[in-house]
Every structure is written in C-alpha cells, then in structure tokens.
Length: 286
Image (cartoon, rainbow, N blue to C red; front, side):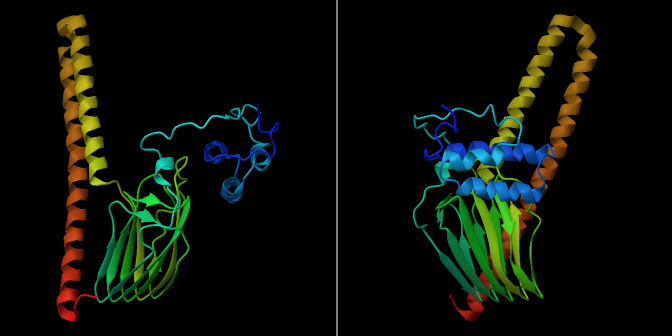
C-alpha cells in the first residue's frame, strides 16, 4: 500500500523522517539548493497526511521506490531521537542571572520555548542529555553586559536568529543538517554589550564510549595482523611491527588532542564557576 493510495491517511513521525532523509540526500547530491531544502523540510514537518507528503519528493530520484505504508506501530529504537521527543510542557521554561549565573544541564525536558535573561552575569543551557517537548524548540537568550552559552549534542540542527548591538551571536554551528528524527534548536534573542555562544559537544560519557570503541578496534586490528603473520610466516614480522608503530603514533596524537580539549573545557568550567562565586559573594545570591 503506497502513499498515493491513501492520500487522507494521517502520516506518522517515521513517515515524515523518511521524506526528510530523502531531502537531505538530494541536498548532498546537489539536486536541491539550501533554500529549496529548507522550504521542503519545513513543509515535511508540517505535513499531516500522506497526500501532503507525496508532492514534496515527487521530482526526486527514489520517490517511486518509497517504502510502503506500515499500518503497524513499530517500537522506538533504544537511544533514538524519537525516544527523546517526549511532549508535555517542559521541566523548566525560564532562567534569570542578575550579577550571578544560571545553569540548566543534565536530565531535563526542554519546553517549546525557553526564555533566559542575563544582566552582568552569565549562564549555560546544556541540551546534551535533555529530552525535548517538541521536534522544534526555541531558546530565547537576552544578554545585557553578560553572556549565555547554549550547548547542543551532535546531530541536532541549529538555527541562530539573534540580534547583537555591541555584542553578538555565535553562528558557527549553523548549516549542518540534522540527523533523522533529531530536534531543531532555534537560538534567538538580543545581546547588548554581551554575547550568546552556541557550541556542539559530546557528553563525557559519550567521549569515553568512543574512546573505548577505538581501543577495541585497535586490539582487533592487532589480533588480525598477528593471525595474518602466523599464516605468512616470519616475512610479515617487519610489516606488522610497522603497522603497530603507526597505530600507536596515531592513537597518541588523537589522545593528546582529546586530552587538551578536555583540559581546556575543564579550565573554562572552573573559570566560570569562580566568576559566578565572586558575583555571589559581592552582590548576594540572586
């Protein structure tokens, strides 16, 4: 059963993600420019029926071979973005830092709109471990002689629309298409003599997981080379040693860069905490 045969049937999130993925492929192949991609992606997430979804990709390759409509609800994959878009009102909808600091991090639910204000203070809004009330959320930041930092996980699409006067908004994380099913984070607001930063970072647990995966891959490569060495005899000894040395050098360089980034992040965190503590001691806890 295809989309054309059921034009009035309600589309699911999975159906919209299937179309969105096809649009991302078309963008990567140069079949759509960025403006067309954004228009069609917006129409995809607004579509409610199969009849509204079908025209969006009708002129793209693969449209005729689209996956059939499934009438059976599929379970959400563990760790998928669908499991993190939970609906509801959100666990916190605003934060204020006046001569002090604010922080939202860890396990919390981001509402459809989160408002934050910093006056001669600073704050961090960390979305890496958060759930989301909707597929599109707005983080509104107002910074007056202060600063706000928004941290998003990899895979999330970021749009920055803030206005700065003698200040500014960080646009470096824009332009990266999101992963299938990932939420869209719109950072907006106003900065006067201040700034709003946006950065994309992994959680510490995720960094450790990736590090362990790389270590396991290295052990597997070594085991495979030893097996090959045993089958080919002593002639491969020198080649195996060379590969081992290259692996060690590459891992040392990678670990050095990762350790340096972690130390820099820890220093920034300690500096921010000391600054906020000085504000509290001087002006009281707001």
